[in-house]
Length: 127
Image 1 (cartoon, rainbow, N blue to C red):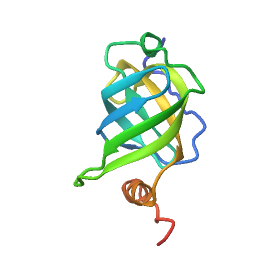
Image 2 (image 1 turned 90 degrees about the vertical axis):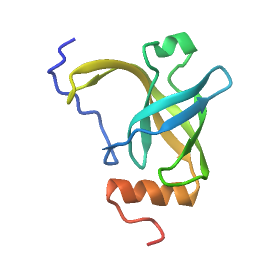
Image 3 (image 1 turned 30 degrees about the vertical axis):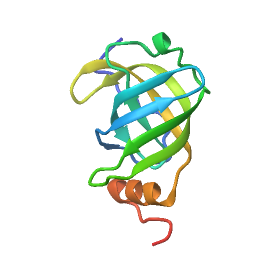
């Protein structure tokens, strides 16, 4: 795999770097304390450390539940989602490989949506 190759998947939403601890669970797996690499209004990338997603029995299409605390908040956000991909990801800026999962949001509360709109620079739906 050429680490200098560019990869631009089809994206509908702008991504921004944001590292927050996230709990990801489904009927078949639990990732209790993992770190996000980037987020958008449409989803996020969650690292699985030095373990492959296959070790957690994570597969494309799995329905998941996310829990995370937004920065400067004590409220836990509960978000539903779906695994879009699970594999190795190339961090082109820092030129390293990491394991993780790409998640698409399917349901979230208005507060979380408003926060994510703010960090990616888009107006909130109720603004």
